[in-house]
Length: 479
Ligand SMILES: [Zn+2]
Image (cartoon, rainbow, N blue to C red; front, side, top):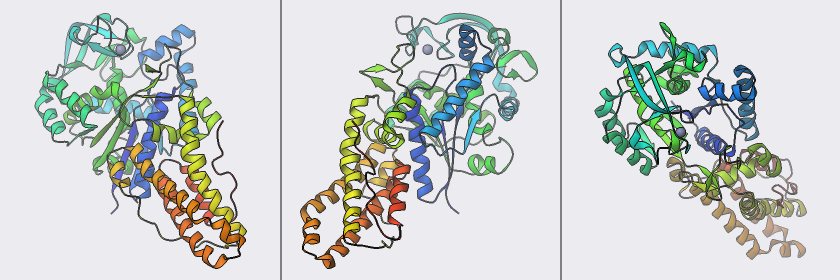
């Protein structure tokens, strides 16, 4: 039986349009998904939107529109972004779906009764993070992420006994049963754990969110804390508790991968496994944590007014150009600058002058010497280092292994000067040479599929034509 892999992105809250940062997460998750499909695994990719966040209520209030209207409009844009980036997702989940609501209620009821208790408390709350902070975790009295002072909140909520899972979580995470990637993040998680886990509140007063959100089972005065609600999307999207997808991709799969940003590892690597343990459910196997995109060193955000519009990027440069940049020129784990200039530069050198030039030169030679049909060969080995890089989620290295092959082929052609042979009517020696190059092009384009699906498909189509014709500008230069 083939290996079964389940891949998810985090679900962003929908109080605004998507920015380029989420495009990075989508494209990374899609590359993992397509790679797994390519090597014959059974795969499912899920993305979606977190619609029950209080932030959505606040923004709707500011804009003077009903919350549901704001949420519907923006959720549509996130779906549109997934399409624009050619994300091969199998399920787009919205947390306002009835199935998700049912799953949240169900999971709450499955938590061990001794893990839930009520407590009156006072705490410092950042509405940006939808999370409480301890004084010691603030930077100059402000949220380290949002740079805003938290507000003091006083209420009675339900708490989850996270502290009871301290040792178990430490074991699971240090032994990579739940593997956090990269290693530096894993160490960050472990040192957070070793400082001691505090129980956390898993509900909010319903009046504070004007009733927006999912009611706590048996207590409509409280709604389920939005992070608990949001995390459950990973199983509600599979039909939690019932059906083939649930069985295949959660209970039986040994490869469940959450792709997330560096600001939310606490929820995914600590809270989420603890909730699953309490509910006696299988845990995710890997948590892959990417960095942020920056613009001239600054975090890209709407409040800073530098939110790069991913739709405009795709519009100007094309889907595969944006995907290539995010996977090749951006670090998979560390913060990286996003710049249009650099995108154009990388694209022109690697794709227009590299792959595009290679394919157009070889196909036009085929055309000129009446090469005829190319007999596609069976799948060739990937370049050295390719599989290992992808197993480590080092997308940049995997792409680089392909780029090197392309560069070598171009040099090969430069040296062989086949156009001279063509002039001298030496077709006989040219055809086997062209065959060999076409075989390499087939190999490269096959393994390029996870990164540049559209380009890969186009090359495949050219190679399978009855007679190979010059395909013109496959990857035209950008200005
Ligand atoms: Zn914050």
